[in-house]
Length: 117
Image (cartoon, rainbow, N blue to C red):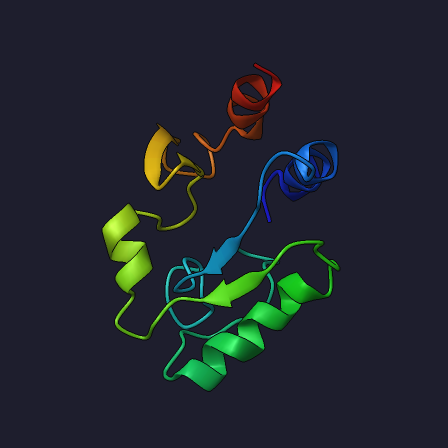
């Protein structure tokens, strides 16, 4: 949820010209894996139901866009090198922006600059 408020503002400002989607992928900082102290308590997903339950933390933020789940084979995460988080902008099915790997290289303002043009 690093910079999540900035992402929500981006959605609010540009939802009339762009469609937004979050794909909830494998948990990067599960408590039974590589966890941060004082992080949200989420275990590694062992099945799709675990992933759905973990995604409910995100849904509590009341996003105004769809949140979908990656497969348990992590197809989206693998295809888009998304772990732990990454932004993409697609236009007519083609990638026009591929953000850096988050959280440190996760920059919603880059998407904002493109959409403002």
